[in-house]
Image (cartoon, rainbow, N blue to C red; front, side):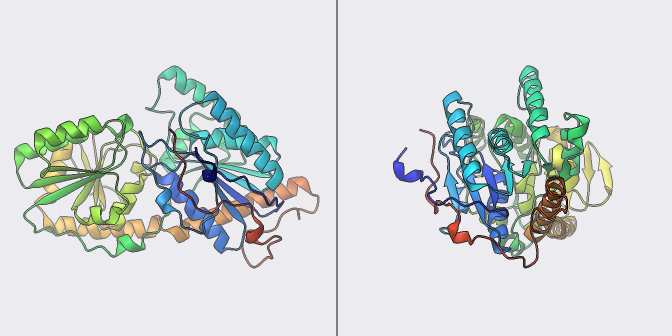
Length: 440
């Protein structure tokens, strides 16, 4: 690790309105997008904010540090990474703890598992007034063997006791996470749906239902939880019906061998693998619809982006995907439930094939679902809605904490309006943007 990839903050500021967002890594997923957006938007509202992030593993994960702009305030902790490391984790905890003691933030908001564990414990020991954690998925189901999952649930119950709020991204996820928490912790759950900047995606033209070829997109990490073999089975079965279909796969990960094998068997023209893609808009513009084959999900950003680009989705009914469909189903047939913006399908390749086949042969239905998908994304998953929800949440949590700490309830200022900021953002300890550190 080169020395210039990590800079120790030199200016120490105690600020009752400072907000720290913490991510384990800048790997592919919704957590980095949310954390970066919240830092920028809180700064726009006039409140000092800092993003703290660890290193990503280039072998198993993509790098989303391209999201960062030169003036984004970022503090890297290279030792903090996804794999478990006794020395690295202890060192990361020590850095976080001392950073919290010196900066005395009003709020620490953690994202992803490692940051959620180390960050919340360190913040609790340092006496941070408000501690928030967001679950972007549900690692308690489908990721680990039963004994490991039990241990993680036990640890999470301890961490939940240190937290003031546990954010989840969908109603379905609230039910799943609530099921593993103690009753007292369940009361801390708050649903805050994902919100992202959709402007560029909203300008993409509707898919051409009259074209000779029908292209299906799949976007995500190539990992077991995403059920990549099901994706390949769908392609194989669909090609048996007609040669007019094309698949575009954007992503990478440990299961890349499954995709490489499919490309060799099916042909790169029919089954195209793009690897990691920064410009997701250009990928979506090539597709007529998206599919998602996961065994578990939070609220997949890929489907949100697809809907904003007017691409309806066909997906397994898991996690937060269940909350991404609009209105009651208008048809239920052969393992498929049809909604105005997408289709929820059983974990069965032939059911997926039936849904894709139906959508491909009805241009009017494709157009109607494309328009509905865009409207749904625009109304539910916009950035302005996210900022409003989080701003309200932070304000409520600080007000509640103030009442506990002072008889007159005046311990903290409100996070909205024109209240003066005690310390300018220029005094906040920060590391200007530099490339994200990587695990060697």
